[in-house]
Amino acid sequence: MNSFIEAVELRKTYHVGKIEVPALRGISFSVPKGEFVSVVGPSGSGKSTLFYLLGGLTHADSGHVVVDGFNGQAMFPLIMLIFLIISYVYYHKTRIKKVFK
Image (tube, rainbow, N blue to C red; front, side, top):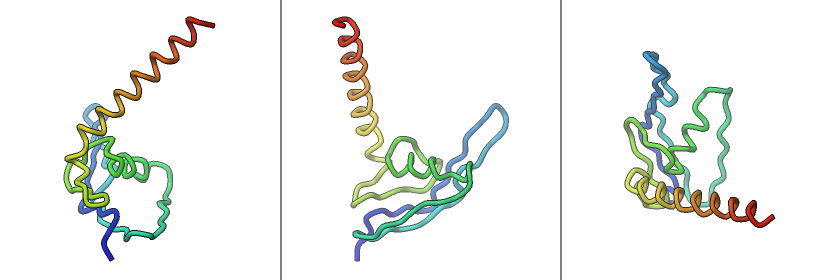
């Protein structure tokens, strides 16, 4: 069975001033099509960072993500463009509603 999601050696470190905070340290896994999984762990263990990487909202320092055959890193510019367009439309729609109230 083909993997729907595949993550290989994902690494992500955040920089807070001079301090480096490793969020993901070489995470690898695959999820076959049709499977359900859950991600659990304590606060600060990297769950949100993992989902940001899987959703294409941020870049990994190293490693790669493939979702349904598409390279996550290659899709990043398109995802960000769509996000910016939706944000722009929502912002202006909200402002127009306020003007006409």
